[in-house]
Image: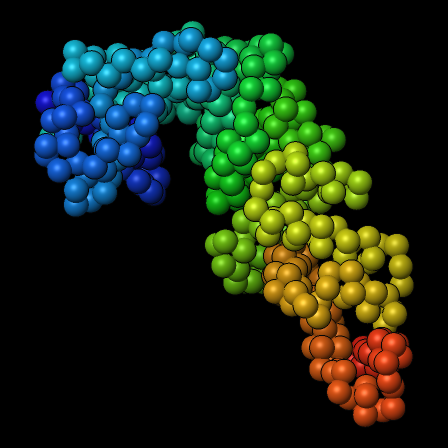
Length: 372
């Protein structure tokens, strides 16, 4: 039994990039032996185990054979005779197929270190085309490492285009597509990911609600990022993901937005925030910034029962716009209108159905006073 560090930890260490997690491959062992050593099995399709102390993942060396469509249509062979080289060969890119033993010695049968030096994302072999998920992974790596001048090897890019043309990406589940998108959101690279996806004509399969993606959108995201850097706006990591998502998909038409949850199985926070952000942009672009319109917007996003949605929208505005006066004005108007209570309106003489009208009138007055 021999244990090797593999994948992202080895790759990112060679790039002097932050190492997020450690994954290991175990050669010459069995599920029974791993369990006897205290490892807890978590994999269903193939044996993956958690270390009893570190909780890092340890997977038995395996080979894969295609027996169906999509990224789940594989038969795994994790016999103890499977070699390290065979396990590395089933991986997607050469830079992800480097292993390191406990003494720090690297095993690099597919020249991943050379491709790291050349800044190339190159597939290992023809089996790459058997897994459509790899198209998204390569696009994600290209986005993540663009600032390090990585590019996709021409032969790999051609293979990705052919896979898209064959319809292989249509077998991916919406949940799996969202997972890749979410990983891009964590590194603020969704706009770069979409550039690659669009260049290989995969946008209809990956994000059909977005009609197109161009350098114009990339420039908008870049300007917003510069705005944040200049103004030192503090944004929590999870909120940052929502902000980046909304800005990247700002080009969606209003009709497209109602289909977003069916298009991608995304958390409601992302879907609602995108709707609110788009709705506000429409108000700012199409109407006067009047007390009546501001109150109409507050009613549409249900400020009164869901103030947390408005607070998240404020964070998005801080991240995506350089005009901070708009954000502050909306916040002040929201505070003023929220201070108006039904009890105050009743005290003014409104009764029954007229209380709603009284609330509207008093809130407009509060907003008007704030604006003046």
